[in-house]
Structures are given as structure tokens and as C-alpha cells.
Image (tube, rainbow, N blue to C red; front, side, top):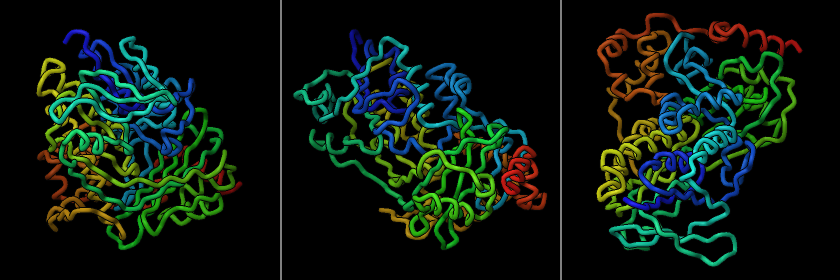
Amino acid sequence: MSNSHAVVLGGGMAGMLAAAALVGHADAITVVEGDTFPETPLPRKGLPQGYHSHMFMGGGAQAMDQLLPGTSKLLQAAGAHRRELPGGSLTLSSVGWHRRGPSPAYSIVCSRELMDHIVRQQTLRNTQISVLEGTQVKGLVGDASRITGVRIQRGDAPSETIDADFVVDATGRRSQSPKFLAALGLPAVDEETVDSGLSYSTLLFRAPAGGSEIPVILIQPQAGTGQPGAGATLFPIENGLWICTMTGTRGGEPPADEEGFFKFAESQRHPIIAEMISGMSPLGEVKPYRGTANRRRFYDKLPVPEGFVVIGDAATALNPVYAHGMSVAALGAVALRGALEANGGIKPGTSRNAQTAIARAADFAWSTASGQDRGFPGTKANRDVKVSKGQAKFADRMSRTALSDPVVGNAVYEVYTLAAPPSRGATLPVLLSTLRGPRKPDLTAEQAIAQFPELADLRRTRISS
């Protein structure tokens, strides 16, 4: 298409990766962003969850690098940490402590503002892409069969229309697309929600000497106990900092004050994180966050207008405790590029094919997050989903076997980090190992911690100081 123009609504992670996916398929790409971007890695109003712990799963990082080659290396050069799972993670899962061992699965950890900053820089290096900052989206232009533009408002100026051959909604959880499409005569978008009421509380700390070398520490909430789920994480991030986040589901929310934060850390299934931060002075106040419900809008089942797709949290918003949101956005952007390439660019049928591919890219993460959250008391869901006892029993056996069996454990981690499809967990070696079950006794907490000498040394220092 000659002189084609694509518009991306939203300039966060999903929006920037979507813009990168459109390169080569539109002559000009405009990103419309309501916020103003900082020149350095800093928090911004349009990203309220940005203060909290984030992991870029290996599969998502690989997708990001497909769209923006070299970005993972740039993140690490700027201070991000790459950690193998489980080789570089001390993990207390719902069924026990994981054994340390080599694995192709990994994650990248750093502050969300650094992630966004590097991805934004990489994306905007392309001169085809421009940004309208401080600009609000007021509606879509076109009809139920085709979108032809977007109504916007720059600051206090009168609203205006910008023409577009292709529009991508990447505006996140606050997306107005259901309303905008209804105004054009489309039916309501089918929506599923699963809300465990999970809340976050986060503090930053200056890491002690050697603290940047620690593994990521993950205490995962337990579902199905009849009690609220409680979890905690401690990650090393850039600039010699630790980021520590407490999580709790409805009825067991973490406090938003410093004293309560430390007590909540001590009340976890193991106090390892409380011991690590004992006696330390936080940098700043506790940052709380809510609004973590899983919500999926099935645009793939809607007669999507030509020239329009929805991506990222605007289509599938996930409870961030499972650390899949950014990675699903990256995989969705790769799916968008794949649909454009398969269809020969912005042509009839591209939108439907792209929306279907974007939905498929989110399937596993959605089933994981929504399925797990249904096991917490007080979870609110707008539809019932039944899992057979046989499926639940086999999944539990696989989880327990993964604690000590590298064949099963590596498969589980590769799938969980979105680096491999779910079928990776259904290969004959994995199934046979799962049927045999655990072949080693579960680790005690002290045995698990002793796998990381650097962590044990720091922990003893904190306890004795």
C-alpha cells in the first residue's frame, strides 16, 4: 500500500512493540500517547504499576529481540540482570522448594522504567515512527466494516481526526475500544473476568555489598488452601538496588505502611525475604497497587473491522503476580507482524488473522493466571470453568516432580517462561518422568537456601547485624 499510515494508540511496552511490528508494512507510523515521556528511566503517571517488581520472561525477551534486535543486551548493559530459572532463582512454589540446576529458561529483571526506556529508545530510532505525546484518544473513525482514522485531542486544542490505514489499540487496561466500537454499530465484546483481589506493596532498598549477585527470590502464593494467598519477591535491579514486593489476595492484602510491610514479610511461608531486608532502611515509602484482575476481551470472536486490532492488556490483562504481561505483549506484537507478513501487508483479512494470532499468543498465560486465581477464596469470576479431578491430579504430580526432576522441571520452566509451547510439557520423556513421580526427597528450606552460598552469606550478615 503506497503512502500508508498506521496509528498505534498507547506508547507503553505493548504500543512500542506494536509500532516495531508495523515497520516495513506502513510508510509512516504514529504513536498516540496521553502521557509525556521522561528523557531518562523514570516512573510516569500513565504506568501506575511501574513501581513494582517486573520480570521479562525468556520467551517474551526473545520476541522483543525479534522485533528490536539487541534489546536484551542493551537492557543488561544498562544494569538489568539475567537469571536462569531455576539456576538463578530461589523459588518456594505452592508445592515446595525447587532444586537449583542448569536450564535454558530465564528471565530478565530490572525496573519497569528501565525496560520501557530502552524499548522506547530502540523503537523510536526508526525515523518512520513518530509520537504524539500529551494526546488523548477520543474515538475511532469509520464504520462497522472498516476503521479509517482516529479522533484525538492534543492538550486543550479542539479535537481532530487523523487518517489511518491501520489502527492498533495498545492502551492497556483502560482501553475504550468496547465503547468506541459500539458507537460504530458493532456488538458488545465478549469479556471474561477472574479477580482474586490481589494487591501489591513494594519497597526499594540499597543492596549491601555483593547484593547485586543474589538470585531472584520467589515465594509464590498457595491456591486451594481455603486461606488468602500470600507471596513475596526480592529481585536485584539496576543501580545497586533491591526491589521487594509483598502480595496478598482478597482478605489477606499486604499493608501499605513500612512497619506492616516488614511484619507481612515475616509472616510468609518462609521468612527468607524478611531476613534479607532485616534492619535495612527503605528508599522511599511503601507503594501500594490494586487493579490486578484478569480480564480477557475476545476480539477474535468479534467481526473486527478491517484496519483495526487490539493488543496487550487492552485485549488480555493478566494478574501481574504471574509475570506474563509484558511477555504476552511482545508475543502478540510478533503475532501481529506474522499476520502482516502472511497477508502481504495491510490488506483485507489482515485484521481478523492478526487478532486471532494475538489471542492464541495469550492462551497459555490466560489459562495459567485465571486458573490459578480461581483457587483463592473470595475470587470473583463472571463465568464458571470446571477442571476434571484427573487433570488437577496430574498437574499437581507434574508440579511436585518438577521440584527435583530436571527433565520435568526444565520443561515446566520453558513453558512457564513462554519460551516453549505447552506441548513441550507433553513429550514422552516428560510424561514418563511425571508418571514415575518425584525421585528425590523434597528440599528443606535450609537445603534450598544453601544452594546459593552468596545468598546464605548475606542472610547471615543481616540476621547477625
